[in-house]
Length: 147
Length: 147
DNA sequence: TGATTCGTAACATCAATAGTTACATGAAAC
DNA sequence: GTTTCATGTAACTATTGATGTTACGAATCA
Image 1: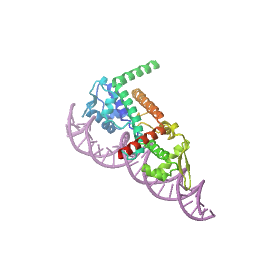
Image 2: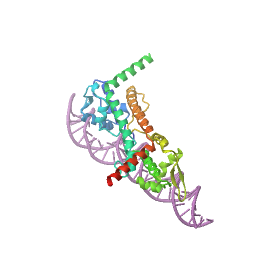
Image 3: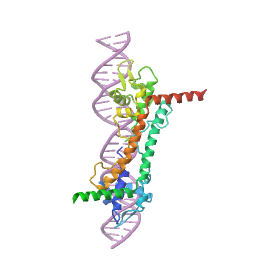
Image 4: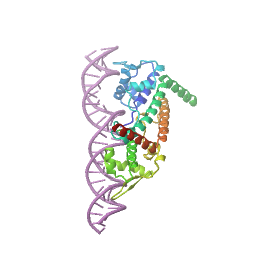
């Protein structure tokens, strides 16, 4: 499979939207992300279903953020996207008869569960507002460097 | 992509080999894993290159473990397999010009790096000998239940 | 009514593991 | 040395899920 970049994509899109007052069309967001408007609609649709954004049709329509940036964590976005699989590595057989394979699975599952818990905790600690502030900092640094 | 189960497969194969004195053929291991002998040879080939197993051709040939079970950690096996990608999730663009995307990438990379470090530490703490002991425990439990 | 934009179906593309077939190479036994 | 068994490896297909693309219907506003 290709690597799943939907969380990255939605974050990128949301931060661009946060920098604007007017709605952004799928076409415009597709330009920002370097992808197709249909892909944008498909992915952002999950956030709409979770109530994090709204979409208006017709002229002057497009996507708008419908939540407080401080309350939207990466974890909430991951959940909104349907909690896609985090790991590319896994057990060969999830419910083996073989006792050897059961031992192998148990050991791997322990390790992956711990890593997943840590990742989701980290995700819970980072909000869109945090990312917006980080972007503002980078933006100010670049301007300072250019002057 | 399909989920990568090579670490799981090699662990399963190695533990079956550890339970025996004589070499095991790719055919026999394929039966244990429910897969094709060629797949076994392909995957075990990495362990051979790392010096963890040897393969003898001809009649009475097959695969043998060439290392102390106490010294072979899951991490060492992961490395022997070429350190395949751990995460199914990633950044959309690894070297973006866009400052927004740079902020997004930085946040995600931090979280993923922490989770990967934890996972590899866990992997380093578990050896084939540990798994063999766990298997022996499960085996004794099953026999006790059956009597 | 016409232009704009989302919503969605349908299909093609891509990437990496897994599976399969075929055959060359090497080792052991007779 | 011929036969048999097993690995080594190339070449190809199957699988899986995200991503990309085309097409068109539905809603909104001037």
